[in-house]
Amino acid sequence: GQQVMQIPQYQHVQEGEDFTTYCNSSTTLSNIQWYKQRPGGHPVFLIQLVKSGEVKKQKRLTFQFGEAKKNSSLHITATQTTDVGTYFCAGPDTNAGKSTFGDGTTLTVKP
Amino acid sequence: DTEVTQTPKHLVMGMTNKKSLKCEQHMGHRAMYWYKQKAKKPPELMFVYSYEKLSINESVPSRFSPECPNSSLLNLHLHALQPEDSALYLCASSQDFNNEQFFGPGTRLTVL
Image 1: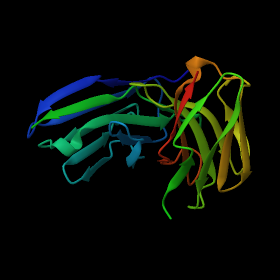
Image 2 (image 1 turned 180 degrees about the vertical axis):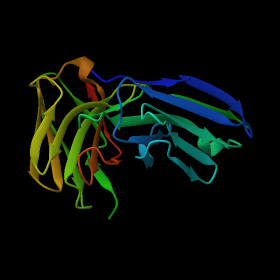
Image 3 (image 1 turned 135 degrees about the horizontal axis):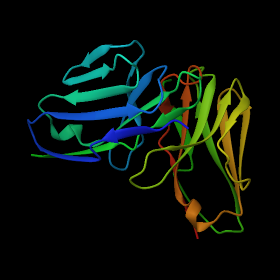
């Protein structure tokens, strides 16, 4: 079955440093979605990418979808303490199967 | 209304109890999901309803029984649970199957 891997599992940064998490699927994806879950909270949808090679920005966040539609990345520029949480990618494979969540990357930011 | 609501927020039950979790959305979404999430793990899909019909059951034990009374409501009936079923149960909805999902706050379940 489809496997979605994320690296790193944990990332500790000083406030102001940049952060990147990478997502890799064992199968080609129809789309890729990114979610953020704050400690004690629930996943909150951030963005969906659909096209091969697509890049989208949300303020300090930059999302990329790989050319082969099997990988994606989330980059945060100049992290803030409000960026703390676990970032999950999720995506359905092209056989219209269910979305599988990656294991997540937990970001902590030291002020 | 862009919210998914879930009740109760917390639930403690014994292994012989019967209880139900409820989820509601008024965004006109046609797909609704139940997930189970253990600490420090990703959400694990349990069931998907699409247009009020069960479309995916991820081999979930029969002690969990989903129900979709109408397009806005989703229930999860619990019976004879085990302590290892203790987790955060999340409901989500999306416009269509496999589009971006909107999650409710979850029900934190403890089975004694």
